[in-house]
Image (cartoon, rainbow, N blue to C red; front, side, top):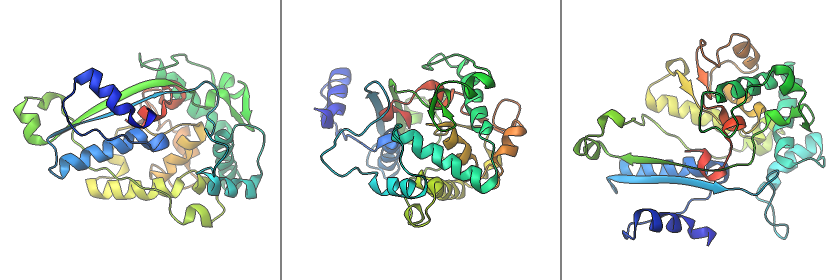
Length: 296
């Protein structure tokens, strides 16, 4: 069944080895949660080598709740949005992120064209990624005037539903040396996982509803653990389920002061030739967003 799909994938791929298999379900963070748990097992000395595997086969169309006979896990988040901006007949996820963008516009005077510029940049990056679901470059005008999904948010600023898989093998230093894997190894300096803080629900903020504070505090802890600053990083892959989320994440990660993401974009500091190359894969907007695999 769905709850043991990991066993099915491993049994017939690697054989019946008797190893522990743990299935993880954490929505868009499923893949990154598997990576987090795998690192803990290795770091804690419970395993020498762990496979973190994520995969998803999605239904067509906009993401929707699978059940109508029970409380939606996002009901408290939705209450914030409904109280502030109401609820339209459009798909809920685009409404949540578009309203986070609307809040940024009201607070800082942001022009929605900047959200479109992010999608424009990511579609351009996708042409270099042979694994991207879409590999087409668009003009900014095409992004701005593609089909409206909700308010200013157009279809080319939204991630598609996707099928996909990704995997990472995590191992301790002794295992890597024993198997002469040093040339292929990438060291994890720090990793932090967080969930909602009280501010998510107490401040009537759609930006915080979609995870601004959670991202900001997790990033601060991660940089502290690694002994690094945002300016020490060259390449960033972040969660651009919608163009708005990439925009507000610039500020949450400390790449620029709050309210100044537009300046970062104007300087070209989110692409080749700037301070950072952000989402060189094309991001979820182009690469696709198969939920179980995305965070890998």
